[in-house]
Image (cartoon, rainbow, N blue to C red; front, side):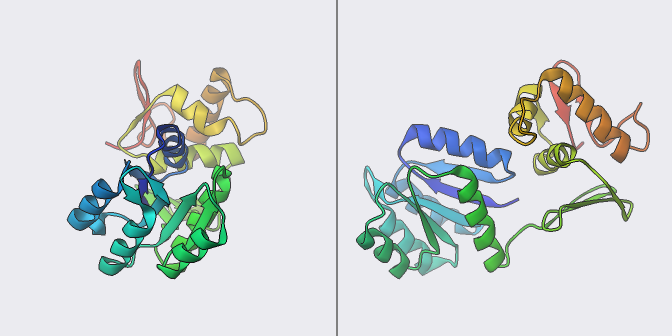
Length: 225
């Protein structure tokens, strides 16, 4: 799973972006300022795969973090900036940043840029595996015991969400939030039950005793032991 360090001091952006990126299968660590970001990088830069840096921070700026990060690691960097003026763009790129995106931005555009950069760095996690299941996220294919199985778009998205959040108990609310915008229509609680049933029919050996997607009574569902 791609682990992103988000450096941003706008709480609303941190909350919304963290929630969205986690739904897309990323792991997020967020800090609000330059000093905390630098301390974290010095301590554990190798734990991260990409930096998302706001240019303007309360106790400094993203340029300083980018300069420090590039001096100690080859982590890719994307700047988040409210300013798309030429100076900010050129300064960031001259410091080694890989891309920038101006606020307000479309979250899916950011995700696309992240995937492009991770592929460029050879860090894209294109193959997800669990027990007898394998998901190729580049081709959008799913295999069981080496044989391809056909899933609908929503079934695929549901499986991907489980695969990217193994060991976590996922509530029905979390699953609904992850699915609602894919079909172009609202996915309600009853529909979710149907999709989970259909997915289990395709990936489980025994739908009466599922071992891949387990029901956690009173809480939700879980993939993993």
